[in-house]
Image 1 (cartoon, one colour):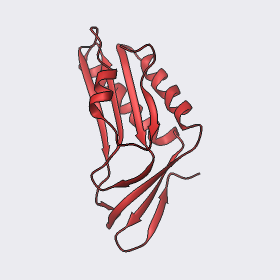
Image 2 (cartoon, rainbow, N blue to C red):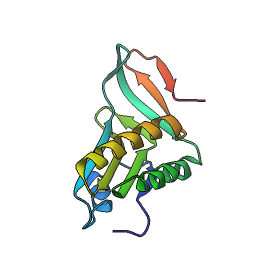
Image 3 (tube, rainbow, N blue to C red):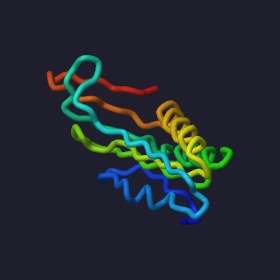
Image 4 (cartoon, one colour):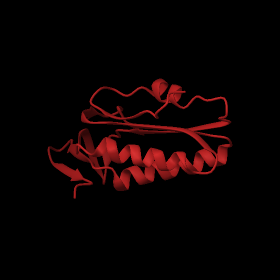
Length: 140
């Protein structure tokens, strides 16, 4: 297990295996992952792709959330990686994993981590719709 958790915002494709490897630990009895995938629709419109923009503080805020996850009861390991740049339908936008002593702790912590990430990390989504229109999501 690495000394510091895997936390990153990357313009390269994400690796589930890398994130799972980052949460492997002998004390872990359950690992829960969350994969955010670019879907082909939103709000009744076809989505052609997305562009994610990350504020320079995004990694720092993401690290704070992972550190808070690691303080939860029973949680042993956690990792979070989010994409930036242009993504196509089917691409991974975010990969999270939480390793805990028991499955319930891992499920609860992983859900809280993705919910907190969506609410607090300054990463903004620019949706490009199939009809040529677009929309920014999550901007201040």
